[in-house]
Length: 347
Image (cartoon, rainbow, N blue to C red; front, side, top):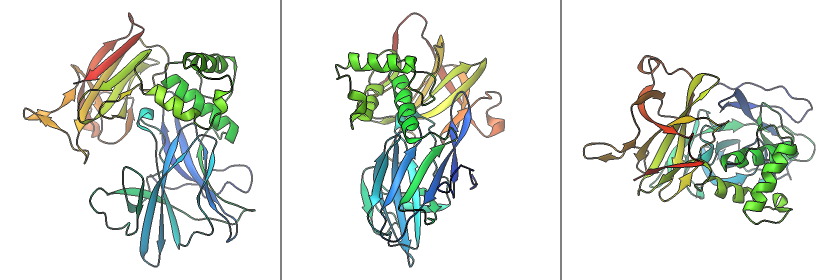
C-alpha cells in the first residue's frame, strides 16, 4: 500500500500514512499523522481511532538501528514514549491491535523492516533478528516543528476528536462483549448509555467506572470471555487463528484472522443479529506455520466453501477463490436462532 496524504483542517495534521480499516459495513482509511516541536520536546503517540493500539518504535542513527515496544495507546489517549529529542536520523513506527478486533486498521505496511518480539522488548541491533525475534514492517515518519510538542496521531477516516475516539472505542468493545452499542460513531447517545449502564451493572462496577484508567482493560477482558452471542474457546496447547463468515445486505463476507490463545476465549465482532454465521479455524505454531495432526493440518471447519487468505482479510466475493489468488476453506455453519449464546470449542 502506498503513502498518500490525508487532508485535515489545521496545521498540525500533516504527513499522513494511511492503512485500510476493514469493516463489514465500509472500508475506511487509517493514518499516521506526525507533527513536532523543538529539541526539548518529548515524543508522544496520540490515538484518535476506535481501537486499542500497541505500538513499537525503531530509530536509526549512522547506520545503527534499535527498536523497542510495546506501548499501549488507548482510544482518545496521548502517551509520551520518548523523553527529549529522539537521538536518531530517522524514526519508524509499527502498530498492532489486540486479536479480538480481527481485521482492525494497521498502519504498518511500510517498506522498512526491523526486529520485534511478541512481548515487551528493547533490541539494540534491530536489523539482525535473534532467537525469539522476527522482522516486522515499519513506517518512516518525518517530524515537522509545530508549537510545543512532538505528536504522532493515529487516525481513522471518521476524524474523531480525542473524546469521540474514546467513546467510539467504548462502543466497539461493548459490542464485542455482547452489548448493543451500535452504531460505532463516537456519540454517547441513549443507546450507548443504556449498553454502558448494563455493562457496569453486570460487572458490579461504580457508576463512574467508564472514567477509570483501567476501563478499557475491563472491556477487553469481558470481550474475551464466553457469554451472550457467539464465542470461540481454545482448549488446545496451540495458538488458533480463526475466521468468520456472515451475510451483510445479502452479501457473504468472510473476515479474519482472529488470534485465540491457548486456554482463552474470544468473541468476534458481529454486527446485527444474524441467524447463522460460519466458522473456520486452524492451529499454528510459534512461527505461524500450520500444526499437523495425523498427517494433516489441525483445522476446525465444515462443508461450506468460502474464501480466505494467509494475511488479515475481509472478502466480499466468495466465487472462484483460487482464480483470485485466495484459499478455499471449509467453514462450519453455526445456527444462532434458538440459543442466546453459542460457543465453538477447539479441542
